[in-house]
Amino acid sequence: MSTSRHIDALCAAITAATLLLTVLFMNGGALGLEVLADGDAEEGYFTDNDLNAHWQELGAESIELTGDGAAASGGAYFMDGVLHIVSPGRYILTGSLAGSVTVELEEDGKVWLGLDGVTIESPDGPAVLVEQAEKVFLTLFEGTENRLASRAFTDASSGADGAVYSRDDLTVNGSGALTVESAGHGVVCNDDLVLTGGKISVTAREDGLHANDSVRICASDITVTAGDDGVTVSNEEGTGYFYMESGSLTIPACFEGVEGQQIALAGGEVDIIPTDDGLNARETWSDIAVTGGSLRVVNAQGRDADGIDSNGSIHISGGYVFISVSDSGGSAALDAGTESGGACVVSGGTVVAAGSGTMAESFDASSPQGFLTVSTRGEAGTRVELSDAEGNLLMDEEIPCAFLNLTLSCPQMTVGDTVTLSVGGAEQVLTVTNASGSGFGGMGGFFGGGGRVDGQTRPGMPQDGGTTAPEGDTGEMTPPNGNFGGMTLPEGGFDRGNRGEGRLPTGGWGNLTGDSAGDTGSSGTEENAADPGTLIMTLVSALVLAAGIAVAVKIRH
Image (tube, rainbow, N blue to C red; front, side):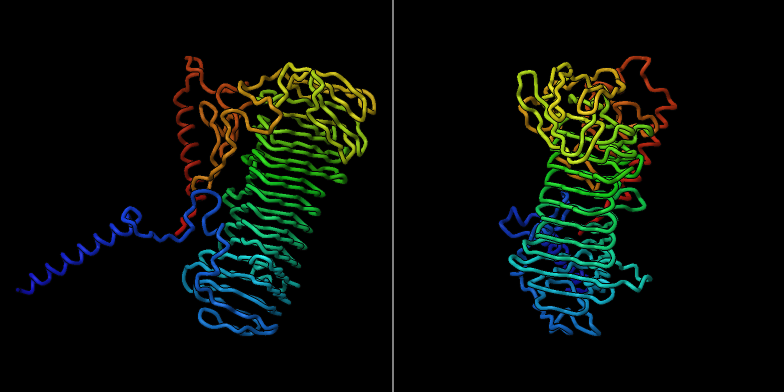
């Protein structure tokens, strides 16, 4: 056989082998073979690896911390008070260390660090520092107590100012306990910070949890005591978001509770006692969406502090929202950026919001669910009760802070309904009109309030007393390519430059459909037809939005 025939035969064999391997890898499942995946494909807010806390059975390397040293080998070594993790893989740490742990891989790769009854106290700098890795998983093993502490941060040039500091994606999972103590921030992540388990307690002089791209929580029991914000999420692209699906987040002391460019509460329990805002979304395109779970914000001392403060929009479509802020100064229970085109809409869930009358804000009159906003005085500890026309109790809450204004809404409230409101035992019969303010006798006499035109409810609104979102709003919020979805676009789409009543800011979440009052979508008539200039502006807006989404997308392997 000639040399050329040998080469041709070899090439044919290589081609056939390549084709066979391709078929096996792509269709191995169909052929009865196990198809391996890395577990971090993002189809939602949490990956399989984020939720898997039982990886220790997969050939992990054990490292014993011995106070001032560590028995390490393989992909780790100890030098000058620092345990260095330099190879991808799984590591289980035990014991205590007066020093720190640094993850610094030469190439991209994932690292699993299991804490099995570990105490790491750093005299200066982070107790755990992730300098380079594709992603790190910090797992709290079942039944263990773990502690990470940083006493000082003197090297400002490094920028690493958290007891746990990661320059890349970081996940904390498991079912054990973790205590974090820090002279700076508590847990810091330059990318995505994901918490999917464990009992976590953070005490920090500055922010408790601080991330650039996102903070995502499920099935974790988290307590944060912070000298500054409890949770902060922010980046230069304006895409930083907070998302909570289940578990609990308690912030008994902080400046602001949760601050992010977008905030979504889909489930779980959030309890915040701030000195400033409870939830704060600071951009004009920001949105705070509550679709489930419960939120409780109490602030008795703030003078210009809001329960929920969005410079963009607020949308409540499910769950239970309770807000009690001081009656002094400009403290408002609800504060949306309506002056800059934002919306404040309730379409489901139960809302009890009490605060000052000076800067009081109510829901948009076009809101699909009925609500009441009344001006009335109540001292701290005043009981507020709301009953329907048949005497069925709809709400019964004790308000911790003195107040001058109340906003109440629940699924049983429909425009035109008659309800009885009791404030401190003083009763008055009111009609649900979705107006912005009504006078009420209450404990301190009559306080007048302005009004808006009556709104209307959406057909199909649940009347069973639950907190189910209205028909057409499932409350599911899966983020395609890192952006929030699950929203119903108003007819005609978003127009960031012309956000009238009923419209939402580009990038926010909507719970209004084209049949809601205040909808400004096209009716198909000639006078509503878009002219060429409008079409051009719409195209430019779409391109800008697409560019923003592209920046936010994170490619994962």
